[in-house]
Amino acid sequence: MSQYRNTEMREKYGIPHNAIITVGGTVGVGKSTFTKALADLLGFRISVEKVDGNPYLSRFYQDFSRWGFHLQIFFLAERFKEQKRMFDYGGGFVQDRSIYEDTGIFARMLFEQGRMTPEDYETYTQLFEAMVMTPYFPHPDVLIYLEGSFEEILQRVRERGRPMEQQTPIEYWQDLYERYEHWIRNFSTCPVLRININEYDLSEDISSLEVIMDRLAEKIRLVRSSRL
Image 1: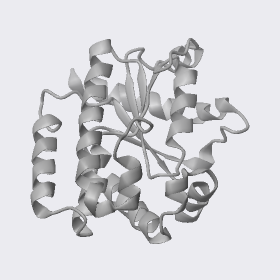
Image 2: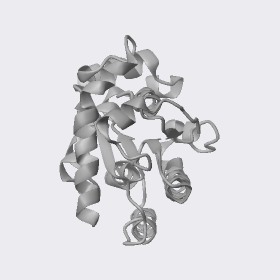
Image 3: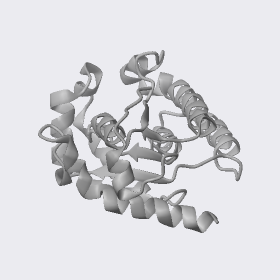
């Protein structure tokens, strides 16, 4: 986690200091770069996806069927602990990838492709429901969903992806892209702010994100007023 000190942008747009914002979107859409830039502008901490210490990720890309269930259980446990920690800390976080994508996209995709057994999928979904989909589990103020055309995102994977991602067949990325689009259309666990990757250019100017601040602040105001 990183702590940023700049709070001028957050105060300018009236974004609460204890807000929790999750950034979602398919692989290659630029979640990590966006997360860091937004946290910097808001003076928030960063909650990042645990990849380097993941004992299953590289094995998964070599054999989806053998390691898919293990990988999903690992992600579920790590994201559950991280989400709880953000709220226990008192908020003020931008999170790279949500816990909801695991069950809504990745575990379901493995099952439907025959790469996760019905028994494993049932075990996983029951565990997810018991851990996450309860009134006691805290949900983010807003989920920012980054989106773009499939061609744009595939190009990013080819240019910037990890070696194991670059070697993955294009059919996998096409299926994943379509599943994300279906998932976000039906997602309702917390408010969603959809942002096209062409709306900002972080390589040129981090402040280009300012164009979304009004929309972000309004989403947070609406969800918090509904809780009163």
